[in-house]
Length: 367
Image (cartoon, rainbow, N blue to C red; front, side):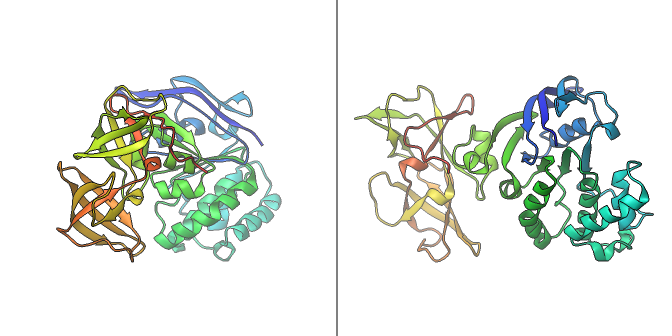
């Protein structure tokens, strides 16, 4: 199998630049998920690798060989789309076999179709036309077609978007093992951060055509490289407040809505710029009594969400924060006055001018 390498790849369409100096490596057997908001350039990136577009600059290599300018069928790449793209006049069996093209005789194709369909649990619908298949069966048929040729590189463009919630959850569990069996270098696009975290060996966060961070799911969640990345991961989203940190008796602190909170040891790393303070909703603790580092607030609304209760809070300066608590935890009701605290190691600091994260000496580490 072969490594996929992107080296400073760029692409423009008029004033739009969906790929801007993208560099990324995917090893054989590795699943890298390209995650980002709609319009960030994810699908354009896949289409350049597949040969539908050519990059304006940079190199795309498979196994150390440049594939820029090569015909799509000569790139050793399999691809599955979010809209399935099955041939309506063919059975599921023939759709899967079409992934081999002219590379295999019919006698060779049949056992491979049977094997891949058993793996994906669709052997019982091989004789069906696409109109007779459920969305889940269509998705697995399209995936089988992409996998059957044992490609060096497998590109998956949001393949679970059009399937129901139950199947999407099941496939998030099944897909990683299935994809690793083929040992292809897998590039998987999604707009769902939960899907990215469940499937990826590494996540490549793409924002406005640029890679903001490439790391494990845990590293991205715990130590996001920028405020843009921090906002993309988490439900509810991260809480932010404008602060100017200061050192006091060796401790880094900040004023949040009139309350002084500790951010950790100053340790010679005092930020000399206005910052965003970020705190995940699940890291907030609610109490009815004042204490050190407690921020006064009022509960605006309580939303039960089965596995958690989400509280909308208004701090005394008008800033609104969200906290996520276990459903059985005491949390009060709308209009109650409460106090909010968080541990120093839960704090994230970002430079307000650049959006980049500023390291804190006592920040908790990703596993």
